[in-house]
Image (cartoon, rainbow, N blue to C red; front, side, top):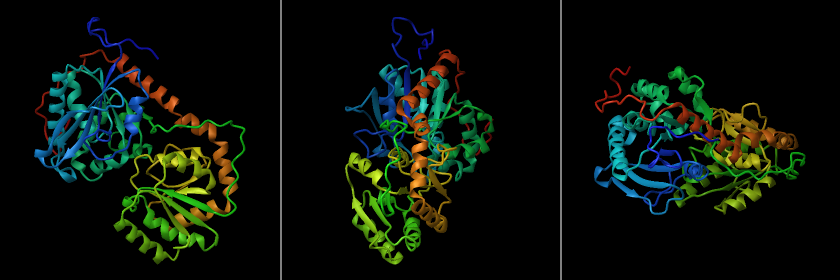
Length: 424
């Protein structure tokens, strides 16, 4: 989709592509710990834009803040910014305000003139974008990443008027976490039709739609893939007793577990497994190359992962695209992206009986579930195929640019009221 750039940019200096300023606290760079490549994947997949990324990482100690140019950027220009911010969201607005000022100074210093800002979390980077956009005279869009959003929306109610305003003034809202949309609508009903899904990018191996469902294993073989160091967030402490209960009806059932761990975590989990009486049924496979795990997935009955506060959960999608159903938690993770598709079982967070019942259903009706996943293969590709996601994202970004002449925003002063005071 081709859209002309704003006409007030002199032709001699006009960039050949629209410049997108990304604000992301989950972007790989050389100065931080490991983080998800989801935003980086989107940047790499959209070369129609000129990308400038501010990779943010909170630093509680102001002496440890930093701002560096990333020397190994996968695409565009990346700046690693360790900004000051206190734990538990203390002085959150002040932290975002300082970060916005510093980013504006960086852009001026580097001669960077963005045409649009994409803030990759509403309640964090979105506040920075809301502060920056009128100063730069550009529009902004935001993503919803539910795990982070709930920290502010649920636990800091005085920020809800500000979040409402940030959402209202965003030109588009991309929902990575579709499950969070009802919560946002409850506090910001004015967002109307601005929300559209933006699944994390996953490579899809296209298979002929007429290809029959793969043959299920002769006995129930389940799989779980997670970082065991956060096993409680992943619901694994509920999955263990639930699996033990379901296995009483399925004597040959097994559960293979792939993922990172540590000696301390291993000791905790093994104690839970022994207490549930299923040490001989749950097998810990450690870490394996990603491609190897994907190749093994069709050999299993289903993926079991009753996580909580899961932003998206790419592993669910990888399992579905490998042809097996999933057990997931409602109101988190991939929930909301699967509406109308009978490809998995959603359970209530922490409901061990419901998890056990779901495992029993998947074990008893393996062929039916596998056929349902095959039947919905085209729908899954339509919703999650990288080319389709990128095309929709690019189109919406270009539409916002086309509708917003550069410099049309009214400049906003830096003397904002803190959250908790009246926000219009």
